[in-house]
Image (cartoon, rainbow, N blue to C red; front, top):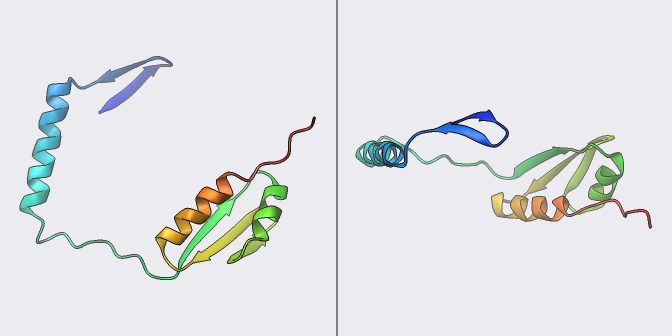
Length: 100
């Protein structure tokens, strides 16, 4: 656990205490593993992104599987989380050309 108290400072638990809390949490989780069901994502998967810049939204809207729902918002529909993750990585690299 860490609480920021300044730009370059924080109050933190000692490493030994953090390690003990992690071990205790893992032990409780393993003991309860029969009770805990995995979270399942329904398919297809939709990702909505709201951009600060409408030009980036315009560029992203040209990609397959993308619907532009407003001036600065797109929705991508992918078959699964892997496809949505790859799309997100690609979109993060869209940039406005810099003035030269």
